[in-house]
Image (tube, rainbow, N blue to C red; front, side, top):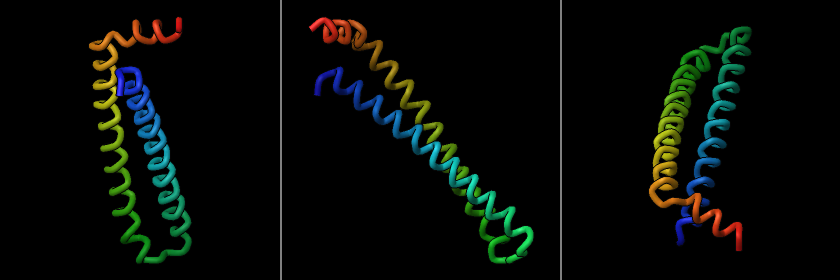
Length: 94
C-alpha cells in the first residue's frame, strides 16, 4: 500500500469514526426519549436500567471521540512527515 492509499484509508477511518459518533449520539437521544416516555408509565424496570444504559453509551461515545481525535493527530502527522501534499500534486498532474 503506497502513502496515498494509506492516507485514503486513514480518511475513510475518520469518516467511520464520525459516523460512529453520530450513531452513538442518536442512541443517547433514543434512550432519553424512552426515559421521558417512562415518566408517565412509571415502570420501575426502565427507571432502574435506562440510566445504566445511557451511562454505558455515553462512556463509549467519549471513548470514540477521544480515539478519533488521537487518530486525527496520527493522520495529520503522517500527512506532514510523508509530504503528502507533493504526492497529491504529482498525482493530479498525471
